[in-house]
Image 1 (cartoon, rainbow, N blue to C red):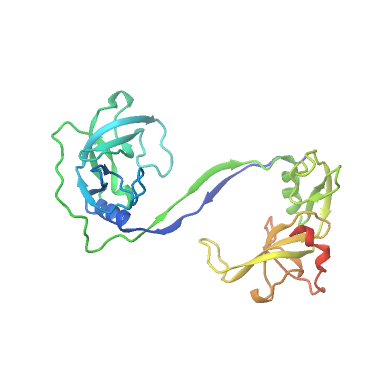
Image 2 (cartoon, helix red, strand yellow):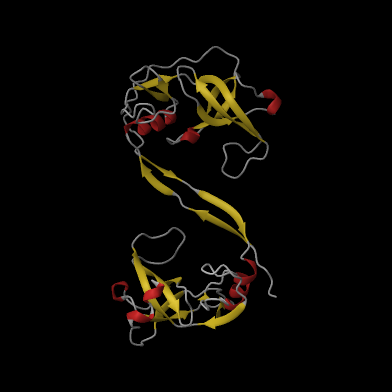
Length: 313
């Protein structure tokens, strides 16, 4: 039995979003050490602000400043901060209702230990030294025993408003491919593609999953497929990915390897992007030391007949 592999993996997708007038004012205010909310028709002040009343769905744009001091309404202790969290030392996640607001804001509360945190604790904003127009402009909250803070009377109008933000989304985890995929990966190091055949329906799955997704039975018979295959469908990529040194536009395709009953993904190279087509016959191109094909290129064979791959679209 081959060694069962495991490796750390990261799924990350930072995306850029534009801001409407309310969120723009809120984040620009944080940059200027001002906390803004919005006032609903019935007089409630919502912090953080939203563009529509959560009770009536009415659009709201009446900006109002609240104080940088407030009260903890509930909290949870975080004994082991993770990468990217507001503080590197243990802290509390707290919902804080700022003075003048009717809703609570979630943020970090810097405290020596959980015994120093309680519902009803008075706190104030600790501003970040460098502010860019993001929720992280509030570095955290800290305990406070002084008088309530006073709003400055800001109207929410700024000469240089923040109009967009980059919102990162990231998941770090350890992945183990299991018996079937470990054997598949081991074969790839020898530039071979190995799948597994279902003993019931006899379909060959690449990459193998250890079980047939149709019949629900274990697969154990290994079958070498390819290396050539057929483009079943594809897309043209026009946006350059970060940390990927490939010029756009390029083509990413589903490729049904000869002998396989499941199409896999691969980049198509060696041909202009606008000449890639369904039925194109391709073969893998390997680079030295690589576990996976760098891309697939045309073989020069006639295109495959649609009937031979229509079930693999």
